Image (cartoon, rainbow, N blue to C red):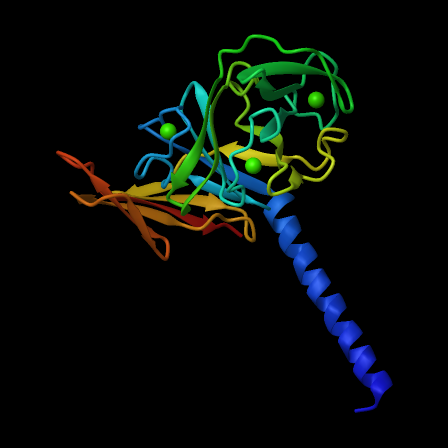
Length: 272
Ligand SMILES: [Ca+2]
Ligand SMILES: [Ca+2]
Ligand SMILES: [Ca+2]
């Protein structure tokens, strides 16, 4: 092969890799994700207990993952930042969680909201315009902050657990919400915005559906999802007396004490 042919071929391969990567990113962040209903709401304390978040929808983040579940009153979110293993002050290890409340893909002053840390507590701010917000307001949503292990990593890392009031984000009558999320840390240094620039432009926000299972067979529940955007199916197997959790593929074995709950699975099936 001549040098020019080699270069051309290499360039073509690089373009293909870029297109595949771009397609994956679109699939991860550009289309619908689901939130799984739960009858056992997580405890919002900043600690990921055994099996607490295993049966959930998982959205990958650059330095960890976002898990979602819901019930009639709350959208539960875990920001499990396995890539932030340095416990900085919570003024600089922080998150933003943004909602397009009226679902119109535009930033509406006084309507759309952003949750974040206000002097260590959860605060609710209203958008005034792109990249501009009111001061902090009281909220009935809840936040637990922590630094420890989870089922995703045994190495201590930054954890934010949230229960977002569905009333505050008008998720009572609509069956989905549109979300943007920032996670940030100085050590290691990152500032991840998913999707990029979400706080200035809502047009690419994540869709999170309050899904219901299509069917349950015993303890296995099946959910439909968009092809290319399906979360990994996952199972929780409760093991009496075991310490901690151990993941084997998509099956998580977690210890439990006393009368253990039945093991169960969440299975995502792409619909055409
Ligand atoms: Ca917890
Ligand atoms: Ca940090
Ligand atoms: Ca809006």
